[in-house]
Length: 332
Image 1 (spheres, rainbow, N blue to C red):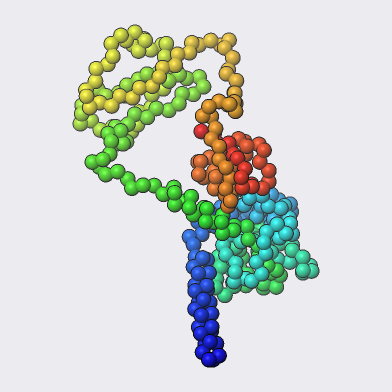
Image 2 (image 1 turned 90 degrees about the horizontal axis):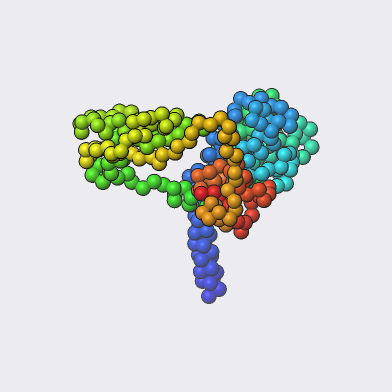
């Protein structure tokens, strides 16, 4: 009786163990989208020289390089390698490292203290990895963990990108996937770039005026290969436009682009308009965004198609660490 019960318990534990290990292995798989972006950004600086206390972008020390790279994606790291080691959760086993993790090494004294840091760019199942870092001799390079110098000084890893951050990034990337392009039958006439008239904003000393594309008088079979840019420096000098009383008659298939006319007389005594900030109470000027768990300034900037610097400018109250529940202002 006891023997049968023991066999039954062993079987249940074995199945549960197999199911758990499979789930853990699946969780490690991913597209590495955010990690690859961080690594690709860091590789742009390969070859930059080493300089003690260098913070970039023209020269770096080891911690200055890691801080500079992660700051691009909304993370503020300590200016020292030992401070970064204390700042992030530790990874003890090499085989648990993944792309985007920090790796810490002893310094030249090999006294057990952190003296060097890099970013993992590639991992292998046996615990070997490659990492990008700012070395004292070669500047920013990619090295292998199997090189004797680094193999003898390796201490541990540290993880900045947690699972929630990566999952939130993947969801946002999926939401941004474009829908299928319209077919030729569904395409509207203005979708054809050959029939479009392109208007550019006038410069500070220019004024945009109402105009009709010169191609509107062309035969229906005419093909415009380049966009037409219409900008006039002084609409008051255009007598034909100023004294025109009747609207231009155009064929029904002609595309007419209309721009509101702004007339400003030349007057050297007029001061240049002063830059004014949008008041906080102006309706529609800003959107509110509540920070969710796992979001970063980088992911929020990508969602609203702006830069991290713009987010900080709109929200001067932001500190070094972005916290869930904070409310950010986003300019429309």
